[in-house]
Length: 405
Length: 178
Image 1 (cartoon, chains in turn blue, cyan):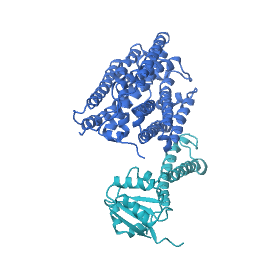
Image 2: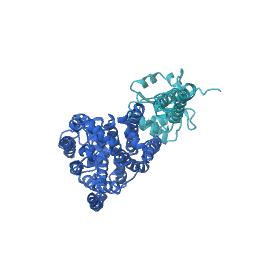
Image 3: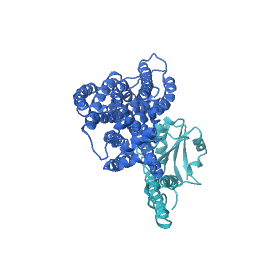
Image 4: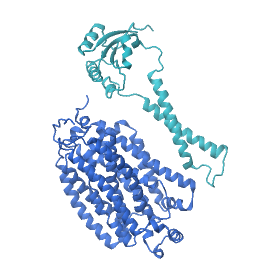
């Protein structure tokens, strides 16, 4: 592979390290508050924890998936965000550790009804279902839950490790062309991601109501993760676009492509979410419709309406505009908004399992913020550790060539 | 209206990059009524000849909105007004079941608007076009790239335009009769 002449400094700007330190400090302070909540109000803490975990896992796994898509398709849009997303992917070991409280919740017979003794399940419908169908616990049980989680995390960590290792090797000119190697891993990697995230979504989220089934649920989570990841990439590239080298490299064409991805994933999420709703609404069967009865009554319906309007309709209409998609400053605000909508969507999926009427607990907010700050702290530390661009990527020429006109 | 006997001055180039550079210089030197022809789409070429906006997206948007409304109203009229049927005890006007067809009609109308809007705006089908009067222009669908300055351009002046085009080092220059 002929080495392209990279004549600009690709090291991350110092602001990245400053952000990493400040966010880490904020994260530690908030984490202390979160731990305090874990002792005062453990049930609320674990719900909030699951919500926070699923939200930040979404950014991480979604980033890995988009990196793998890029390795299969090529293109300049992906080179500019490869390291931005790579740093998110490399937080997987942290998230693997952060997963531990969830099996602890299972061990303590909390939040997951199938992990509780039948007599202590408060929801009549779930209790009767578990008595009538004891086989449910043949799949949803403590050892199974942990073994499956180990498999998911093993697969994700291996993928992340290899993609990172090869990407790092590719930073020196002497090594061989990695393009083929990346593509050979990414094809099967994406298929594995599709399967593991479906099973993980069933284990960790859908099983909060073991009476309910929806075959499209894993795909809704998957589409949400991809959306989170591309929005997060836009968020970071906006921060970096004020500093060298990104201020010179981020062309409107690339931002345009990222805006198109946002539009795509919004539509994908809406398509999956609406399909689930339409099928369950049309079927109107007792074991399926409870999901929406819980989520449309007692004030929860307002959250659903907000999601339909502001997770889909309004961003969709805005993103139809070509000038908007090409403007990183404007796109940034929509990305931040959608990251919040991702959290609200997971909130609307997880929390109505525990309360008939709409309410936010302190833990929902504190734990999400604590995990967010810690995650971002590690994220920016990762981002600071490698050059901002993979200098020997096959598509690097597109990024380094001067702007038109 | 009497037509100008000369349609424009056309230059022939060997590569996409040469055409891009030529288009850039021609636009920079003040020519506005210009056009370019190539065997395949070239990224950035439209911008270089000053063709930044077209109305197809607007036509598609309007078509899509009309299609969506038509689809929804059609179902509402059929299911709730003209021939109400009790389906599983649901209200006759059940919006969730209308969404799929509404969506499909949006796509259908938007797609048709894109095709016919495009044809209406670019004037196709066009049985006669003066550029084909130059026999070499047949190469435009193979491996040659053409740039034309129309005689309707205010800056157009046959000898001056020809000498300007010569500075772009084309393979050949021809005057195009209307």
